[in-house]
Length: 400
Ligand code: NAD
Ligand code: NA
Image 1 (cartoon, rainbow, N blue to C red):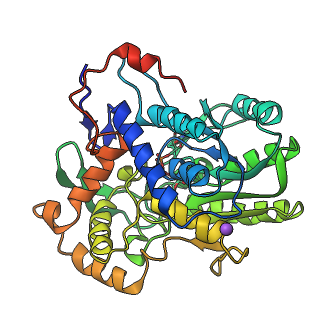
Image 2: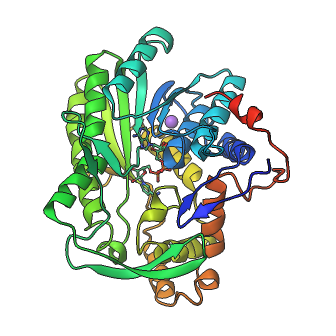
């Protein structure tokens, strides 16, 4: 079969396995020549390792100087009668292959990171085959649902405001159109449920259980990712349900830091730049901001993707040269610093008001936005033979 892109709204319904392989290789090539991570961790667990920031973290830590063995947990689907499977499925496979070529472990666990069984399997593996202890735990899950560990009932996150409803344009990648949509006001229950899904509770639970099992090394660090953004997007993000959940995540970092400091460890949240990922394209009214931001940052030569962000985080912040992790007044690591620079934001605001449904494909960086989205799914990459006839057997023979 010839694998073609299929997009429904903002969801990719197909992925190109060898495009994903190329994307992994491109990221590896980038970190190999970038400012390296020195004195970095050697044994790393990444929750949410198959795409976006988690995958970039894993690549940075394995190939960007630290040469870490990694365990990656993710929720992905392989080839079946339903289709070729998800991009993340192939990212896991080709990451592992590249890691093994470099003499590193790249162990993949595919399944629900929220489940007790997953915790037990991973701990067992760390003890029996991974050398017994971790130096770093990266928490990079992004999801819309989490089961209540007590009842199994599902909490669902909502992307809503906590004040007045907000109307703003959103992009439909399938039709290349910009459509108005309104984000309603969350009920108290929706606020709480979003915090359950995207707040820090599950992160803390993982750290507790790993610590109780004795698999956190002295000096072990942990990091989770957040977004804050400029004032212009506060009503939809920072002061909405997602922002509230992130506030919980930030508070969790402080609690975990107290706990982990007893064994010389540290816990942080890193605030990252707005980027196109499988998760972020869902955030309504956010796309005009990203279109303007990409355009301005590219014009200024300071644009970064996930891999550049993560390499900078690990090389210059978490394992930076002066050994003390630089943080802001709220003890947050800021790799969104370039995004938030005053002159960048000034130009972004000026551009955002000019972006309309009629002109967004040229006024903002829609080309870049769409290319990023396609590349997340293994399409539009240079050097890939998209006319290749790929058999189903070829795909089922690839193992995680
Ligand atoms: P993503 O969708 O690319 O990655 C999410 C990962 O979580 C995938 O590996 C997926 O398989 C995994 N996952 C989801 N549910 C799971 C489950 N039940 N069990 C196991 N694995 C599961 O998302 P992303 O944008 O890279 O987001 C990662 C983090 O970065 C989030 O905390 C997000 O808020 C944060 N962040 C994102 C942006 C952005 O613009 N994209 C900016 C700043 C911070
Ligand atoms: Na260093």
